[in-house]
Image (cartoon, rainbow, N blue to C red):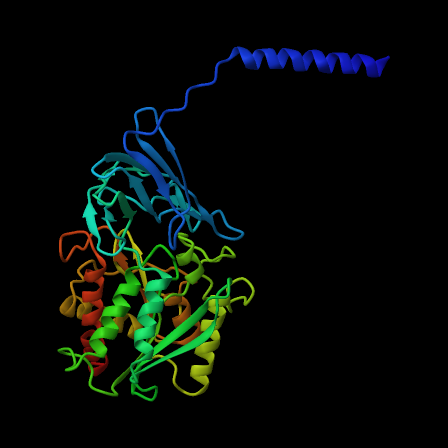
Length: 414
C-alpha cells in the first residue's frame, strides 16, 4: 500500500511540474546581428572562450580561466580569435572575465590604456581602440574587410609555429647552436639557442614565454639574435667572442599552442618555485632548465647574468632583494643595467622600489640559489612610454636589437 501511495504521489508531482513548466513560455533567443557568422577558436594559439549574442546585437565573449595547482590563483587575459562575418559589416564585441587572482590577491590585467590588435590575414597587425568599461570588461567596435575574416588579439601573437620557423633559420647558420634540453608536459621540445662561444669571458641567459599570453619576449629575442648575427655588426655590439648569449625562447610551449594565459598544463606557474628544485612531473619545463644549468655550471660555464622576459600592465625592471651575500653589489649593478637600458633602448619605465621582493621568480631564485645576478624585465602590453603609443612586435624587436650594446657596456664597466 505504501509503495502504491508513493508511486501515486510521484506521478501527481510530475504532472504538476510538467504543467507548470509548459505554462511558462521560453524566452526568445536573440538572432545574430546583421552579417555576423561565427567566432572561430579552432586554430593555434586561439584563446579558450564562450560567446553569446545579446538582445542589442552585442557579441559577449567570456574568457575562460586557467588555474594554478593548489592555489586560489586564476588567470584569463589572453584573447586571440577570428571574427567571421559578411564583408564590410560592423560589429560590437564585449570581452569579460578579467577578475584574476595573482599571488592570492585579486587584480585585473586590463586598464584604461588597454589596446587591441586586428589583422586581415593573421600576419600584418594594426591597433584598434578598446573601450575600457571597468576592470572586468572591455568593448571593441570592429569592421570586417573584404575577406570576411578579421583576426583579433590582445597583442600581436607569436605562435609555436613562428618559433619553429625562426629556429629552422637559425639552425642553418654555423654561428648558432640549437640544442634540445627536455620536453614539456605534452612532449613538445624545449630548445636552448646559443650565439657565441661558451668559453667567452661573459655569458648571458635570457628566457621568454614562461607565461603563454606574453609574446613580447619572443620578439625581443628575434631582434637580439638579428643584431648579433648582423654583418657588419650592429653599432655598440660586443666584439666576436666577448659575450656568449643563451636563449630559452619559449618555456611554456603547451600553453602558447592552446591559447592559455599563465600556467603550464599541470597548473604550475613557471616563473614561480625557483626557490627550490623543480618537480620533474609537474614542471618538466623548469626541471629541464635546472638540469641544463647544473650541467653548464659543472663545466665552469654558467651564466654571469640572467634576464626573464615578460609582459604586464606597467613595463618595469623587477629587481629582487633576497637576503644573500653581496646584495649591495648586485643592486649597484642592477642600477647600472637600468641606466644602460635607458641609454641604448626606448626603455623609460624604471624599476621596482627599494622594498620589492617576489620570492620564487627566476630573477629572485637564481640569485638566491645559484648566485647568478638575475632580474625580470616586464614589457607593458598596452603602452610604450618611451614611444607614447601601443606596442607591436616590431617595437619589441627594435628593443632586442639594442640589447647587445647594453650588455657590451655593462660588462666592460664592471
